[in-house]
Amino acid sequence: MAHDGHDHGPGHDHDHDHDDDHDDDRDPAMTHAWKPPPAQLERGAGSGCVLYIDAFCGAAGDMLVSALLDLGVPQDAIEAALAGLKLPGYTLKMTGRVRSGIAAAHLEVVVEGDPPSRTYADIRSMIEAAGLPEGARTLSQRAFEILAHAEAEIHDMPVGDVHFHEVGAVDSIVDIVATAIALDYLGADIVSSPLPLGHGTVWAQHGRLPVPAPATVLCLKGVPTYDGGIEGELVTPTGACLLAAAAKRFGGWPAMAPLATGWGAGTKEFAERPNLLRVVLGRGSVDELPQGEVVLLETNLDDSTPEVCAHALQRALEEGALDAWWTAVGMKKGRAGVILSVLARPHSAEALCRLLLSETSALGVRRRPMQRWERPRELVEVSTDYGTIRIKTARGDGLPANLAPELEDCRAAAKLHDVPLKEVYAAAMAAALQQGGTE
Image (cartoon, rainbow, N blue to C red; front, side, top):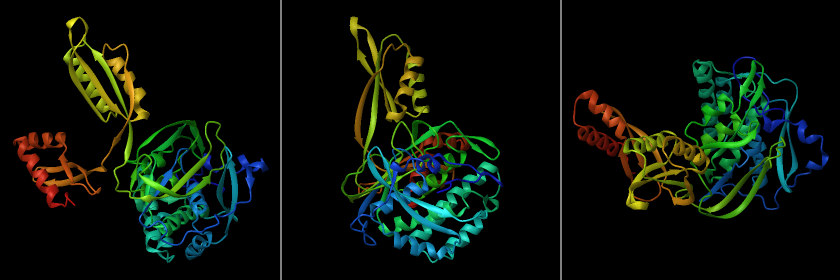
């Protein structure tokens, strides 16, 4: 593939690290003939199953569709559906690539000539008229909608005026739509790992851009990410918008019995890890309680004031701690003290440890890795007589729903309307239940 890029306004052109064709092609040992799996999957083979997208080295559009082909989605089924787009001037070329001894697939969209730039409206119309299966059409449109809104926000323009250059190119349209076709063909519930993001800068027509690219960050609103520790772009805008549109949730390995595995290769070489994306189809349910990796940070204090301890815990919550609390204890020499405890995701543990050491008199912090069962949760907004209140909900896993109005929203509304907090809280709960919060 020439590029898997995105637009930053008229005339923008920007190479992504996942799609630097010359990197591997100079080493013939890294490229070989790809053989499809002996048993091709039937349409709907993923019904009642989970497809886990293991993006340990990031994700790009070409890597996603390549991994799905390697999993067993027939290439003929994808090509037949793509024909409805009536995109001229391209062919598909499948090759195999090797990373750390793992044979993976790589789909290259060979483009003839210089494809024209396209507007968001052009792409929407093209997809709408293509006669795609309903699921593939909906997912394709949703992915481009996420990307268009990201570009509109970056450039401070109406969504309808977004003009795609790089993402409007043939290869990027094929990557996004082909991935949507393959996922619809499987029919599985999709779970993705949290996404690693690179750092540094990349060249664009208007100069240097930071990594991750601005469009990538906006596409990943609400998606868990972490520092991948690699200089270069690990998640491209096409990969970001596809996963944001397709995944039902993001988290650790789901409870499932693996049935089939597919590997998709990027073209960039990284010394730190193999540039691969793995997809695993398994028998299980996306609604089963997932296990989450967490870290418990603790320190004992007998010489910090209550004000300092309270401030440290509040700062920890502001910096991304999952929870924070203190426990009264008796310490050496009969002194009263407290244990400060902070629960964190592994990727933020070090920063929170530094915070505790900076904000308190602690000379050390204990660290214990743990697993916890986690309910799927989300924030929803409800309208009340006191304004909009956010409701934290846990539901969709076969257990009774939990609903909890956000305290700060209720406090602000109570102060604004000069009413007791409990009245706002009750109004928010009533609105949540009326809106179907227990479903």
